[in-house]
Amino acid sequence: MKEKHCTVLLHLPEYYNENESGEKKKVEEDLYDETIMDLINLKITDGAFKHGQRSKVWEKHLKGFYGTWIDRNSGQIFIDENRIIEFTIGFTDEAIESIKQYMKDTMCGRFEQVAMFGLVIPDTIPL
Image 1 (tube, rainbow, N blue to C red):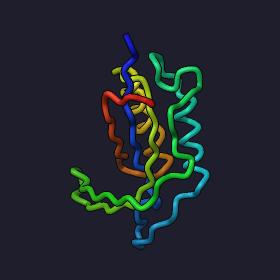
Image 2: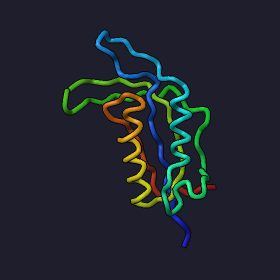
Image 3: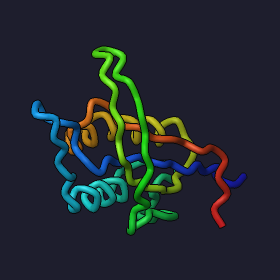
Image 4: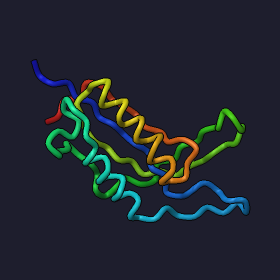
């Protein structure tokens, strides 16, 4: 039986959230590369980045994607310009949970975000 795969799209902000003065500071370029390397090196079994391989991570991140969301706790509205990182992993509960935990534990702090957005597209067929 062939292993099932999924495609993961992670939205990474171009700018940190506004400071008290209402200014937004640009995210440093090396943080994107650091995130890509973290994702490549994540130790997830059952096919996710198995043996250090990856199906596709866009080295030249797509830019110009905008997202708007409301923080349920504060009611604050955020409008973010994002980059997208796409990669294909084994479609297992463990792999998905590992990515979600990484987003919460590492990405939110690295990019100084209240939350991060990602999307899983199930049943991807790598070509």
